[in-house]
Image 1 (cartoon, helix red, strand yellow):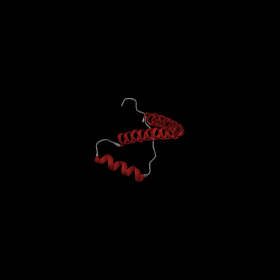
Image 2 (cartoon, rainbow, N blue to C red):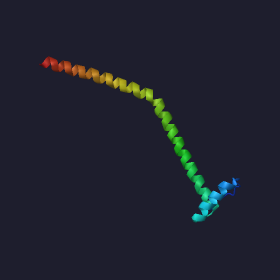
Image 3 (cartoon, rainbow, N blue to C red):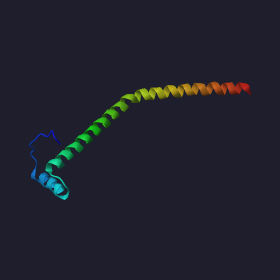
Image 4 (tube, one colour):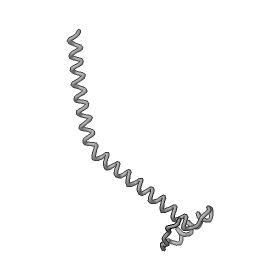
Length: 91
C-alpha cells in the first residue's frame, strides 16, 4: 500500500476495545482492520444506493408497465374474439 495517508480518528473506548479484541484474535493491526471495515462499509453503501435507484426506477416504470399490460390484454381479447368468430362461421 504505497499511497497511504495518516488520519486521526476519535473512537469511544468501548469500540476501540472491541476492535482490539478482533485484531488480537486475527493477524494484522488496527489500521488494517479499520481499512477493511471502511471498504466493507463503502461497498455496502454502494449496494444500498443501487437498490434504491432500482426501486425508484421500478416505481417510475410501474404505470407504464401497467398501461402496456392493459393494451396487451385488450389486443389479446380482440384477437381471441376474432378467431372465435371465424371458427363459429366455419361450423
